[in-house]
Length: 309
Image 1 (cartoon, rainbow, N blue to C red):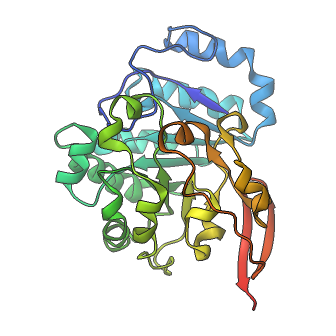
Image 2 (image 1 turned 30 degrees about the vertical axis):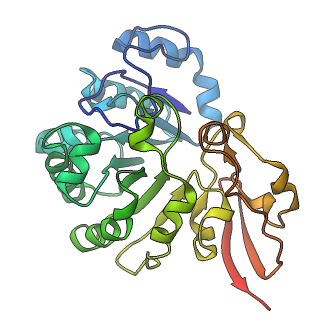
């Protein structure tokens, strides 16, 4: 369950999937006051309890004037649901804020967006001076004060960032060895990404050679994930890290996909990617040379793979 708690942000990321602010919540309301948010949640509380997790999104959720109260309310009323915060991490530069957030709930994940291995790259993408420096400090505070919580880093792959993928991963492994997970997300043609299409757009085929330079997770890295990737466009050794991360109404399969032996394990293709970038790079995988151990998890279907001849 995605819960948008704020429609404003202190970054201006070129590839953000959000529209221009303000934008309405799921019920059509533009009211993001604490009272309005709680009223919306109460209307769908039974649906929320059927899900295993709640994602707090924005804008930047931590900028909400009553963010701590929202988190307390959710923790009290939905104790069985894991809460995941999607954030740029900049407000966690304040140690007291980081401590207060982490004290509210132990069943809490924080995924922090970081879009490059250095300030010049990251700040160019966020279009916000010092955003890299502040996010790095926020990550340091979160990792210092966390208990059972998990802290992850999200890296959105765009035209401005894809050549830095190997460097980024090595930088994170070196400076944040205790990070719980790193998530690589392929850009989506939505919101600001469409407005900045020429600066953002990159194909899967352009990205693949840089993915091939990545060394598989070492002991110092607990988990790596790939979001928004069809299987045919990533190296096979990364298939166990590929997640199904888009809604059914956002994805499709082209005719070529019907010939693929591994379609049942695949995310599919973002419909808007086809609209803007075409379908030439998606080729069916016709050789049954892989033995796949299934996880039983619809979101992460492949556990392990082994090659047979």
